[in-house]
Image (cartoon, rainbow, N blue to C red):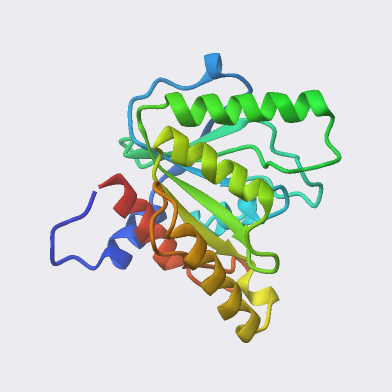
Length: 213
């Protein structure tokens, strides 16, 4: 994925994400998954964690992923093709932990997420989004345990970092880092982002490319 050892990974990633990116399909069930032709990087997070906004910021598009103020709107796995010819795919996973959703819908989401994570050979890394205002919650620990048990590599991405004071952000990041370093499948370093301010987005792009290598 990179242009060689001397190439700046931030610049390599910027150029790659400036190229063609398009929505491929939604998969409400495993039988609708696209053929595993290329490597995939998935995005997981609690409902309303800012996943769609982050995907839009990452790709430099305003409306690649639909944003909504209604938690739990994404109920399917959404696949996006990157590059022409195709280089890799981004996968937007259904938001988890939305208490007001019907129980059968929550169960369906859980099965879909669990089966995808455990069975997708081309999945190289899952980026688990954590709201900087709240830190890790029990529902986040559930998904991290699922990833640990499935031996799927994942990395924590803090979202909405512009919404908290610098001292609170530092304390939250320290607590998150301490916790994830005890987990077997977690990348030891977190990425702190703000979709609104563009903070951490170049580093996140580089992290996606690094995961594919």
